[in-house]
Image (cartoon, rainbow, N blue to C red; front, side, top):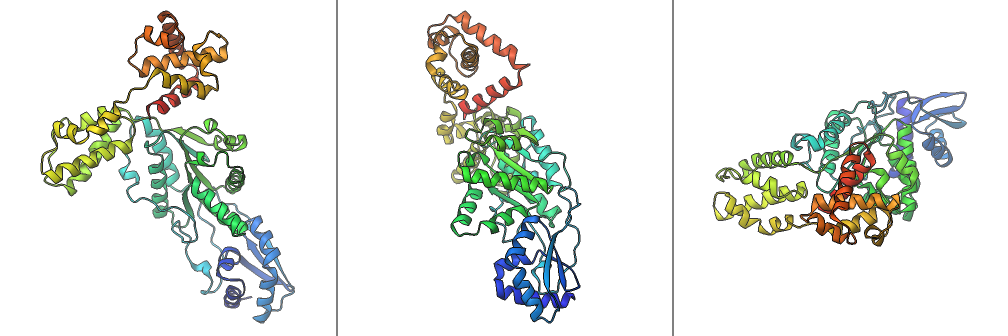
Length: 457
């Protein structure tokens, strides 16, 4: 069978089965040959082979006969995939020009149900510091589009620390450097919405094949699917199918896989099998670097606007919650100074941002710490301040003491009174115990970092 004949068959099949079915199921087939009345095709996956054999073998056979091909049956086998993870697809024989297989496979393909990418979120605009240098390096490695030694890449951290920025940056780089790859970025909420929509429209097989044909899948805020059983089930199978094919997966969440409540254990295990990277809260140097980079960008927009020495340093010290609030404060400050035609001074910054500066001064209370620690360790609040000395209660109590000293201005006797009237020496002992254990107990150190982020957010 010639390419021209197969092209004619494709034209007829598009009309017979519809454009969507043709693009999803028939266009990916590779015609291999015609021997003894058997037309052979290769399918990229076992799932596609089985689905096409059940649902489209007869239409293919009928249209081939209509085109004058002497054929008795259609046989579809799975194309062997020997390429490494993230490598470019092997060249295949193409049908005639009328077939959609001539269209390039790119991350911007309209059929991919992804979220739009933010043009601002590139590697060039990402300020690297100690709290995020590992996450940045791992993201850059994935963005190269070649094989990596970790799959999935799991990024986690609090709000405004750069997880989404890095994921968009990966997608941007891959679209430029590897346009042959099918790259899909979307939120976990969008994944769930697409899944529910496919169930409602009875197009679940289309959904499965769509997501299993992707080369790089990026899912943001995966904690959203926790507790949603059907979505978790489909996500798990999609994850496994892509990993088995050597496709790259990048996931983000607000906490480590093991700390996401109501997420199935098998999913937690799968998400933890690659590289899990924590984006730590920003330090002063990183916040100052972000402000300086943002200010350089504003100089073109506000060429006549002057900013006095010390203003950026002041903001970096005072606004510590997250990068979004920090950048928003700078944007507001430049707009305000431009409207009134004044230099950005420390006094003007304090006047313009007084509400945000007041909010950043919000003090964490001992009571808040006790509630968060009790919730995190699944113990009763009354036990934390009570007399019980069981290890399962004593250790969380000491963690709460440590955080009370670190995050509040309360004195040791005052903290002791809030812990059921304990003596200040007991509080000091608990604090010292946690300080000693943090250096050797990585789980304890992670617990404290997570609780600190939750309390300061």
